[in-house]
Image (tube, one colour):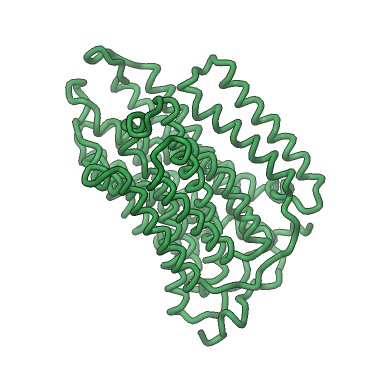
Length: 490
């Protein structure tokens, strides 16, 4: 397989107005997929009673989505490279409809968890949308389009928390999933009608052995990391999952090196620009998650602690909400920076801003509005930096690997957030005090979490600077729309 780095294909020959409609559709579809991450957070404590199960079993409602999304992103990207982006996005939207409806009508644990896992699978829509918008948007809109779609990864979680909290408090909990079913159906119809088909397929056989190895390795590793604080970090089960997952992933990498048509081209992933971009994604995913974990807890903490702010989950979500808007506002600013100084420096600037937001939060956490300012600052950094990831990836991989490579990069961010969840849980449980017979984190534990998040973000900035400022790029044949599906004067 040719692994020569190449820029993404030139823009598709569609009109500016049609391109705007396509960009809006892909942004909405990605936003709907990202909403699935925070959909059940407001009812998480009630799930054991609602599903008539144990707390441990109910906790899989979030873990199942995380694991399925982690596996599906690179796989969905690969399928898009093979069979076409539109087909795969329509399929992902259809999966989201079925998954949401299953959660809405299901009453037991098993159908609920199956639905949540399928919602994670549907998140594969996002990396495909990112690579599709780069190929379809006119040249003058490409950077802004990629920035905006990329920002939906963070915006979905920020908007989803207050929205789902309001729905859960106002209606029956099933309404959460009826709403997501309607959103998914709108995404399905809009993607089918608005997004043009493209003649950019690269027929190949799906690497099923590689798929199984990657799925087993990733699931084992992520389960071990995400459940470490529950099972205990001295538990044999925890380390069996982590070590076993790493071993299987090493075997997966060796297998892919010898495969003529790999699921993930390890050689391409090992190229310096791609490698350091993915390492930065892990660190920045870690840094971004720190705010999502720490700030809502601080806002909702009992005021009797002396530092808690006593907000309801809906109020906490509303304080977090401006962060989501900030990400969208800064997406076009990121696009201008990418065009002016390059994606590498834009990424470094964005992650540095994230770190500044966390430092502000660590020293100014005595009022809800101050934490909101902290979230807005860090969200501005995420909005600036997130758009740089797909730009750096697609500028340095062959066009036939664009979808799978962006999917791998999205996976790296998910790995970072998973590790962040485990580290934050370990820090918060390492420094505790007693309140009414319950053990809760101390104020210093929250300070430490925010400083750790800032450190991870700064480390991401340093790694971003290791990405070569300029790379040699070979020309490739353009990926153009299907002429029957998209006339030149559309």
